[in-house]
Length: 106
Length: 121
Image (cartoon, rainbow over all chains, first blue to last red; front, top):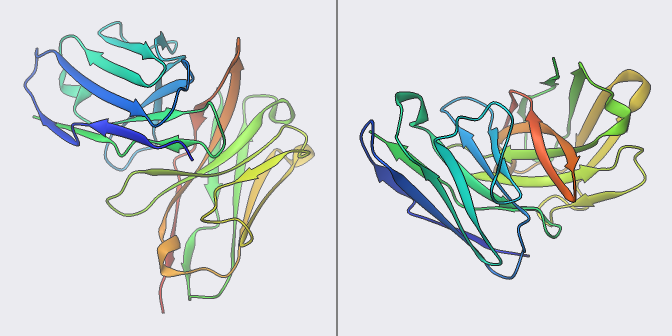
């Protein structure tokens, strides 16, 4: 199985801050990586696929980069609705695997 | 609008069974692969299974292989998850998720709200 390691596991920030979350794959997954946002008690929401392609309707303050084993999710200017948990997920190989998540707090 | 709605969660004793359903609307169910993902209380997301659009290809996570079975009824726009030999470690919110193909990328783009399964004696 491909292990996905996210860091940090939690992050405190303020409205307007720029933050970056890192995701590392246990082996080369090319760019077969997705990012999800999950607010408490809600279903995950797809943000990014292909490591860097924003899903339709996702604000441009979100961006993703990386290829191979190292990936990042950046939020350029935090808004109140961005305080949530974020997960990376590889879809290069079954079983699909998620990172452990990053909880973004005020 | 694409919608997925899970049903069938509840409480079960260890060793018993439950069947989850995921009813979809707003898109051509029979053309999409579908996934099950769960989230234990306070934990992260765990992928469990995928079934191809016609049911001909299925993959499972090791944690549920041999105990859980995914299948679908395309005319009824419904995805199922038969869960047998439940253990307390299966306690979680269970989500169904649509898998979309864009260029060479197959990823989960639409999710249901989830249904809660609690396994306890």
